[in-house]
Image (spheres, one colour):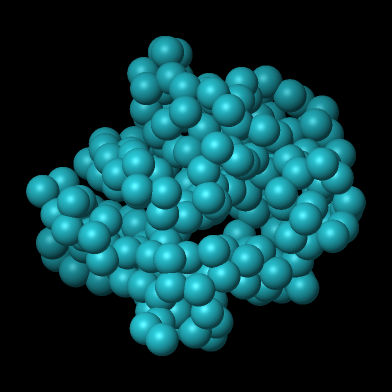
Length: 239
């Protein structure tokens, strides 16, 4: 049986560092998490005219995170100083490839900023800066290395995520200053941290559409691995 092909959205960086010209970027462990589970990782360049072709190739889509913000104008808010680091080309591509994959019922997995993109796609809103709006919130941009957990997430036992991991409380890493606020249409909140910040969402109108605010590609816990395994099992080429 053909290995499932999993598309990964890419970050884009300005000239400097790796190259004197603009360059794409993705952490190696995003791709390795899929390869270790029997899939083929397929990084996606931001060419909108390739979206139809991509959707004909892909068996699953992972929308990755990054150090940038989705334009608040996409969810009806004004731009503040906390949302000025935008990458409109990336966001436009992610929005359109998400739309196309969902139309074809291809499993979509949103990670960190990818969860936020999913919520905005379905008409939801974001908290632009957690510490400003919720001063008593725990630290969501952890000081620990990203391959360590830093706080817990409480999982709704009526959610698809709970069906996957069979736990009401898990430990996660954390690297975000924004988060889901108002859920989009048909979006169910499946997990929150102890301070009430949304940590996972799902849309069960589709075959597989889940977003998590942490970074399970580090495969720190058994729960991280179970989520990736379930995503892979639900691709169009079941393995």
